Structure formats: C-alpha cells, structure tokens
Amino acid sequence: MSHTVIVAYDGSAGASRALEWAADDAARQGVALRIVHVLAPWPYDISKYAVPGGPEAYAEGAGRMLAEAEQTARELRPGLEVSSALLDGQPAKVLREQSGPDTTLVLGSRGLGGFTGALVGSVSTHVATHAHGPVVVVRPHEGVTRNEIVVGVDGSPECEPALGFALEQARLRGATVRAIHAWQLPVHAYAPEVTFDMDELVRSRQRLVAEKLAAWREKYPEVTLIEQTPCVHPANALIDASSTAELVVVGSRGMGALGSLVLGSVSRAVLHHAHCPVAVVRS
Image 1 (cartoon, rainbow, N blue to C red):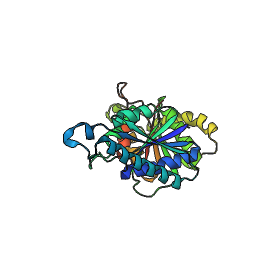
Image 2 (spheres, rainbow, N blue to C red):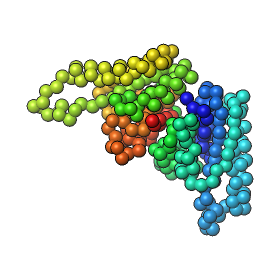
Image 3 (tube, rainbow, N blue to C red):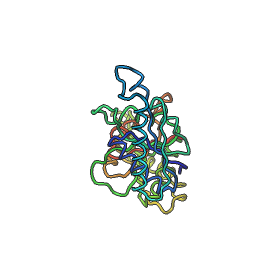
Image 4 (cartoon, one colour):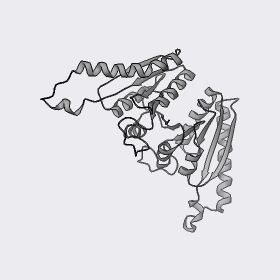
C-alpha cells in the first residue's frame, strides 16, 4: 500500500490517537513509521507572543516531545522501525509537502491550535484537501465498532484508488468491506407528469456497483465485500455507516463534484462529520 507511514504529532489528545493509529497501520503493513512535528514560526517571530527562552527552548521542548512519542510507538508496537523529525514552516504547507503516493499521512482531527468548536481543524482539513497521497484523519470513535471498513463508490475514476485502499486495509485487518453506492432520484422524478421505473433505477445502480467491484473481488478474494445501493444522499449514507465502522474511505472527488473543487462536497462532509477515522484517497 505505502512505503512509509507519517504521523503529525503535537502532543495533543488528537495527535496521540493519530500516533496509535499510525503505529498500528505501519506494523500491519510492515513499513517504517515517521513522526514529525512542525515548528511554526509565529510563536517566537512576534515579540508580543515570544516563547520564554526563545526558539531554542521551543525546539528543545519539541525534541523531547518527539522522543517520548517515539518511545510510545515502540511500546505500542515492539519491533516497529520508528524515526522522528522536527520540521520548520507553516504546518499545513509542510505536512502537505510530506505527502505522496508512497506515503500514508496520518493526522489528528484537531491539534493544540484548533478551535474547540471545530469538528476538524484547519490544518487537517487543508492537508486532506491538498495532499498528494492518502491522508487519514483520526478522530475519537463514537459508538460500538465492528471489524468493517466503509468505502464510497460511484462511477467516477476517483473512487478506484479509494477502493484499492479500503480493500488493502481490510486484507491487513481481516475486516469486511462495505461498499456503498448511494444515489438520489432524478429531479424530474418529482414532477407528476414524468413517469419513471423505480425498479429499473434500482437495478441499474446495482449493475453499476457490481461491474465496478468485479475486478476488485478477483484481486481480493479473501476479503468479504458487501454491496449497498441505498436511495439517499451519499454523505448521509457514509456518515451513518461510519457509526459502526473502523474506517471510512472516500475519494477526493466524485461524479457530482465541480472540476474546480479539490475535495468534493461528499468527501468534505464525511471528513467533518464521520464517527470514525476517515481516509481521503486521491488518484
């Protein structure tokens, strides 16, 4: 799946959950874990908000924090190859540059600088929107979890990498994949003078999903793959399914997204409102 798992860490509760998720994922894949902390310039570049001891003290404290995070990761997963790095710059930009097709970048839903009322912090949202590879945003799970991964499916090419990511995660975890293709009635369906065959609409959606998943079933015969085609808004279907899932996987843009949008409206809604970790996977 990836050659390195990178986790952003700032000592917050959200970052600690992300660290645990990333260590488990790296161990399952048999790859290295890299823990990074970004030294943002604003605390000591503005005299009014200067950190006592200056940037040297700030960097020393961050170094100790990373050392403790390394130790925690090794205790969680003995034998895991772990390294860490202090990076300079604006966190969102630096973390985005760490991403790539050969990495999985893991972040907490909110760090130390997040607003209390925000569901997902600005840094996590920016990175998930603009990263060059898979991004997993980890948030506290709400409710009972079963060994299942949920993935959104539509007819767009953007869902193919998401399907691959979901199935590989399921293979490593011994989990089931629930592939959800949610759809809504055509606008004209609400006009009384227009007739339509509801049964045929349902069958056409089922055929679309079956065709989309056929090659993936052959590639991952060991993974139980469940198909669902509910007539409901896609975001609502995925968010509801997340209440009992270990992970929800979405593509960066689906068929309904405007070409100018980097992250589609459905993926953005799931990122902000899902009840479990969310992976955003782009082609």
